[in-house]
Image 1 (cartoon, rainbow, N blue to C red):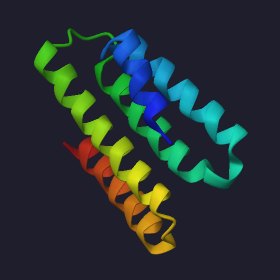
Image 2: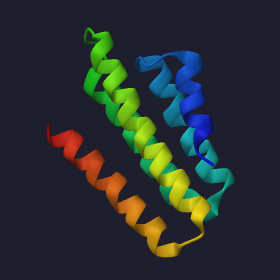
Image 3: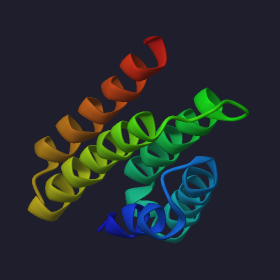
Image 4: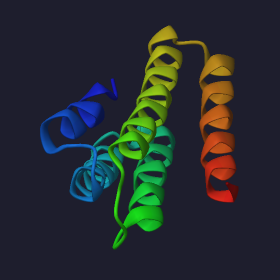
Length: 107
């Protein structure tokens, strides 16, 4: 469901430009699929956080790859939860992703 976002990063690269495009796409998808706006907003926030943290700075390949894996984990967790149809699992996944975004911001 959310895999198109990591596909953007695969095509554009794991740098600022790729994450900017990913954030914009997540917001667009959230508008198109309003019933699932919350997970798209979380993924947009995660991508924008990457941009805010690293824009204008040298970005080591290792850091970019770690951030890509972290974001990919969010995409996978939300995708699995939303595919399950289980509302509790969806809420848990969104809370897990939100907590991850908060924790990354504090680091």
